[in-house]
Amino acid sequence: MARILDFFAQTNAPYLHATGKSGTALLLEHLSAGKGGRILEIGFGTGQTLVEIAVRRPENELFGIENAGAMLRSAQKRLNLCGLAGVRLAVASGDGALPYPSGFFDAVIAESVLAILPDEDIPLLLASCARVLKPGGLLLFNESLWRSDVSRETMREINQKCLNLFGIPQASDQFAFPDDWERVCLKQGLFLEKKQHLSVVRGRMPVKFSFALAISGLYSYLGRLKRAIHPVLSKQAKEFRKAEEQFKGYGVFLEGVLFVFKKG
Ligand SMILES: C[S@@+](CC[C@H](N)C(=O)[O-])C[C@H]1O[C@@H](n2cnc3c(N)ncnc32)[C@H](O)[C@@H]1O
Image (cartoon, rainbow, N blue to C red):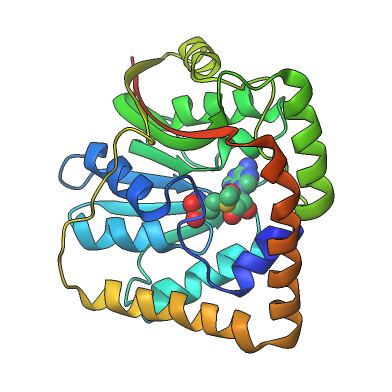
């Protein structure tokens, strides 16, 4: 497992994607699944978005799949504490296959998962998403993609640095821009419904008290506390912050994008 992802898992870090909570809020605004409909989150990390969905959409059945054991354990703990043990979590095989029947889901979501996969795995996982969706079902994902003025050479240079420093690349240089994602999804019979640049539009979570959200917030807070006082984790946090400084010279090179596709 990538060094930085292990660090995030150990510190219960939520919203590990472009524009954080606001990006999730925007994605949830576009999420729809009828009463009793099934929703799958791929790469749920430490599980915060699953809690947000469970609270706002109690009428839906929720599933999640992850390929990092440490993330899965952290998310399971979060869900148990929040009284949401009914969310069904599974381990991904990592070959792009999804262990669900065809036409099983009304919606599939992913936040900053697809663009960090090896290039050859991206069409495979998208094909699996198309397979498990019902006709008319939605695939929603937000990703940090390269800004249009970034050259392939710079992308490769940044990716190599990220792999060395954090253990994961920044973003695919083959599927670098929104058009690349539209093309690869279209090949799987997924038609673009909406594309939103997150720098332009920000989502807002409705203000609503819920026991589960309060506990989930506490769980994330305890992770931050652990990061501050645990000698190994606090040292790692400092190293990661220092490593981030190596990217300052590139200026702004990423842009968050939300996509909504419909299966034809
Ligand atoms: C950048 S993190 C984002 C986590 C979470 N979606 C969030 O926004 O907080 C990417 C996550 O995707 C998971 N992941 C990567 N490849 C995966 C795959 N093929 N199937 C399922 N999960 C995957 C990683 O283990 C990691 O937890």
